[in-house]
Image (cartoon, rainbow, N blue to C red):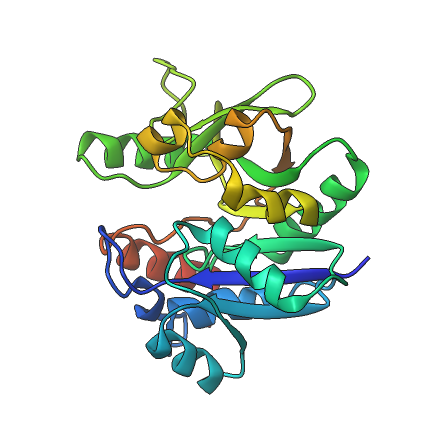
Length: 266
């Protein structure tokens, strides 16, 4: 079964216009764009048969081709990354067995997150898609709470049942806990890693499903699967000493650059 990785990227954004082209300096001081760093993260995943950048923007397309990416030009009607991946899948034809959506704001995603995701969906024949979750330590939970206190809409949290089926995703920090945790202490809160592995039938069907009230309120595309009654598998992954954070706001750039430096990533 062929596994294709698609990195959806768009230029307009309410919170951060032009985000895919934002520059991030690595440990050696070299600046690379967010979209290039995400593409390079995908190149390290052994189970991907092909990696594409999907965009409707000529600036992003030209930049991506400049660092060696294959580009799929999609329409400007896509409302989110999943719809863009669905349109890109249509351009690729019918020989794809699984599609992984590596969103272009997650350059710190390690390869084992993505490999575990693909393995998880292969094992669960009832799931329409799979997505990784990472148990927060006290330091990460404090950062999530600080973002919300400052009014920044940033990382997403997830809750799931005993069989790792997703119950809900939110921009709020859920579940609530009043406990205090040490920096390296595990907490009951899971950070949702914004990556998805879809079965092609589910991805093809997704754009035709109604946008429900939860997706509209939270602005989270994965809630459309839950609202349509489909199983979303959460795959718990381990950090193995790696830091993880998405670039959601301009204020995230220094945080991610500090993580790149701390981990020695170029």
